[in-house]
Image 1 (cartoon, rainbow, N blue to C red):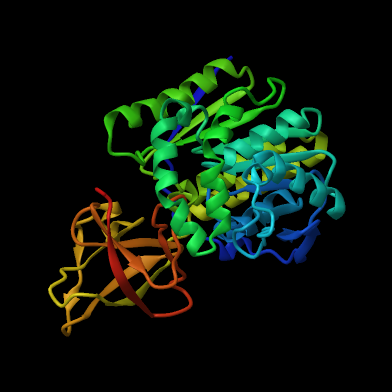
Image 2: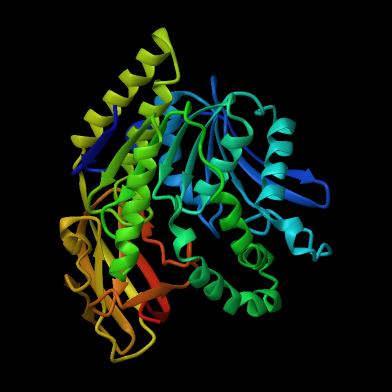
Length: 401
C-alpha cells in the first residue's frame, strides 16, 4: 500500500545528548591514477553509505552522523567523489567519458571492496547523489537492502535537460581555467548522465524512503510543480516506497530539521534488521526523539558581521523563532561602524542561519563557506562553545541571475 507521510516536526535540536565514541577512520584510497577520500565511523552490522549532492564533500553530513551512529550502532561511510573535497582526479586523462558516472561507480565499487564493505549495504543520498544510489542499486540489487532519498532529482532533469546542459556549458571553460575538474567533468557529462539515468530505476524489491522539501528550491512555478510531480511519480511506481514531505525545510533538509532525517534513516535501518537488533534500534531512536524534543537550553550570543558596503542594511534569519524562522527580513542587525553590523540573540543548538539584504534575491556569501549544488548552504554554529561569532561577507549573490 502506498503511504505518503507529511511530517512537521517542531524539534528543539540537540546533539551533545548523543555523543559518540565510535572509532573514526579518515583515509585516502588509491584508485588507479587518482585517489578517493573516505571518512568512516566504524560500527557493526550492515553499513550505511552516504552520497552527497553535486559539488559536495563528505563534510556535509557531519552534523547528523553521530546521532545516527549512536542509534544504529553500524558503520557509516562518507566520501568525496573524484575532483571534490580531498579526492583527486586524473588530470592527464582528458577523455570526457572516462570521468562519467559509470566510471565513478566503478571507482566506488573498487574502494568499497578494498575497505571490506562490498557486501550488504544501505544507501542514503541527497539531490544529485540520488543518481549514484540508483545506479549502484541497479548494479547490486541483492546487496542494497534499503535506500533513503533526500530531495533527489528523480526524473526532474529529463524535462529540463537542455536548460541544464546550457547552464553547465557556460561554466566549462572557467572550470578548466580554475582546474575545478570535478565540476568540469560533471558538467561536461551531464547530458549523457541524464540520458543514462532516465533508463534506470531503483529495483522494486528495495525499500525506499523518499523525502521531499517543503520550501521549493526553484522560483519558476513550472519547475516547482514538476519537482513535486517527479517525486509523486516515483512513489506511484515504486511498490515499496514511503514519501515524507519535510515542511518548512529547504533543499538541504537536515540543516533545517536534522531530527527528521536522523529518525527516517534510523527507521529505514531498523526495518532491514530482525529480532532484538531491530528492537534495539527502535528503542534508541525513541530515546533520541524524546530527549531531543525536551531539550531547550538557550544561550545568549553576539553575532558580528563585516559587510562589503557601508550602506548595507543587514538582516539575519534562520531555523528558530529568534531568527524569524527563515523570514529574510525578520531581524535587522545594528550598524556599529561603517562596515560592522552586530546583534545579540538567544539561540539553541544547533543554530542554522543566513544573512540577506532583506529578501532571498540577495544572499550573503560568507568567507570560507563553499556552495553546495550551486546554492549557499546555511551557516552552522555551536552556541554552546562560544558567545561571540564573527563573519565576513565577501559579496552578495543575486538569485535572480
